[in-house]
Amino acid sequence: MAKHHRGKGIRHLVHRGRGTCPLCQRTGVKLLYTLVRDGDTLTVCKRCRQK
Image 1: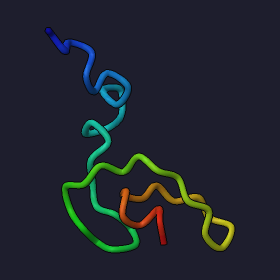
Image 2: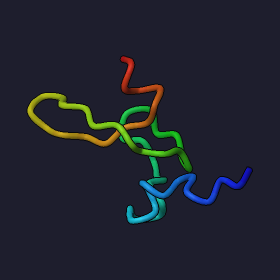
Image 3: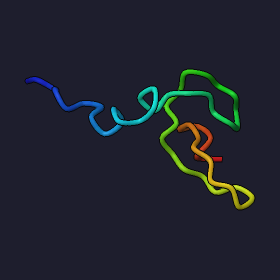
Image 4: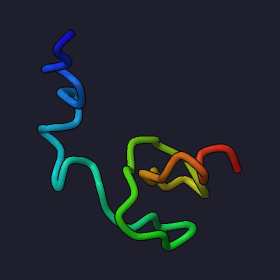
């Protein structure tokens, strides 16, 4: 069965949603989760959203 629509929701993001996480400094990870920290809104990776 074909999976043509996989990843469609992040194709409009810059670099397909990938970058460097501002908290853990990992590179090449998907930054899909928003986190409010000290009044600032950050876009973080999956591991840092749980902290």
